[in-house]
Length: 213
Image (cartoon, rainbow, N blue to C red):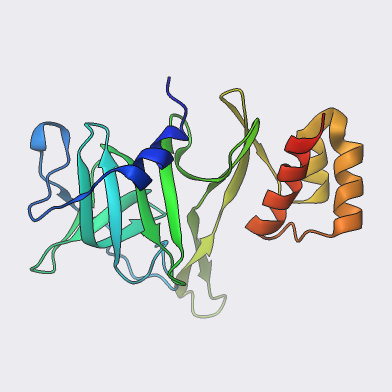
């Protein structure tokens, strides 16, 4: 099995063709209409505004689409055509790159068991992030009216010899994940003070971890 990191290399190097008629399903099967219709506070999307996206399919088809959103709840890409119709790109996507609300480009690749993940750090121990959301519904005690909102639910994983292990982004969670090097890691966290609530802080910790003998 090819390393999941290979996709990230390809997506930055391949020439991507602009697609006017998008059919990326097996055998050119048309895209299906998105089922996201229920009104809920917040957004289930990685990018609220439509963005340009470079996409590679498992059939080695490269696409450059102008109006794409990444639906975190359904874990699928959604494409809008010139008539304003929204379609969900099927499971044939193997990797893609898309910008967030701050115009920062993120590259995603499909992990065999986790689905779409962002590789935050490559190395002997990789650091993966899976973006997600969950819908939280509350009911007013008096009126019985129900309101729903989207809550971010991101997950972090370590990749060691093609095996993944989820961990909590906290001192305790990281110490449990790194095993026999936990004392050195905890000392590093105490002395350097990386913000474990940010991707940058976690990247710093595991860069240090990968440098240990």
